[in-house]
Length: 408
Image (cartoon, rainbow, N blue to C red; front, side, top):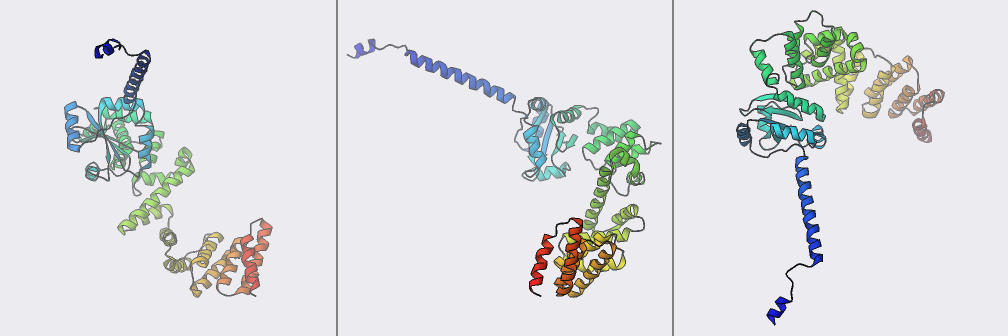
């Protein structure tokens, strides 16, 4: 019975099962092939390990270490992850030439490494040898081709930052070398780039050459520097080359930077010097004006009110709008009657300069806040008439005027 059953059962699998197995085999092979392809095209392969082990691996493989120094909140870092590190050409080049690591500069070993390698902005790209020396660095978002160029510069042992620094330390002061070195330092946001740029410019008779103007525009960083003074003195030349908007934006950057430094240190010397250059004879006035803006922006309204009264008691308003603006802010934030009466004076001065809807509306509301509704109605009606004449939207004035009229 048993043998009969064996003899009647074929050891060959049914055709349907063969077909299934063939399909399964094909699917597995396809999946394996795709896995290999995906591995090859996945972009930069970052390893996770202790820094000491990364250095040892670099020594064993005789490669530079590439460090993507990032933070979790950094937008450009995420763009690099999404748009650059994932590309095949970047991945192929970096995987072949570097030991690649990503390090969060605010976690684990990150803070210590950030201090060691002077990482202050993100993303920072470090190229480090097995001895732990930075041979090259970059900063900020790069498109794939630019990022590859940065990596190739790092591999150039004659022209990376480490090599250029060695040349400089050995006394090389060739003008072309200093020019290129300063630009490399600027791209890496190394703190020494303005010093090298000025050293180069000292070799130049004509600072107005286009390459020199480009260098000054890029690298002038300290407001007291010779480059910055030249930049301000020749503002028209730079505006012609780079545009008024860009030049004024750079000047504004310098002012904001000095304001920040003065607030941090409590020393306004550099800021006053800069303001004296920008506004000869008016540095104290501009400093007081900045203080007013600071108090208003930080909602320190009691201090602002006193500072504004002092300021406009000492300095003349530039235009009707400046007076109207301070009077309006008093209306919105001040409750002291004597301060409000001062705001009424400013609103009246603004009207003398240029009678319009806005300053009449401000004066009317100030009178209302002081409880003088008859005067509020008078100037409110004048504001509406001026608005109709100039085509301004005065619906808000009409609304509060109706409310006041109901109570009188």
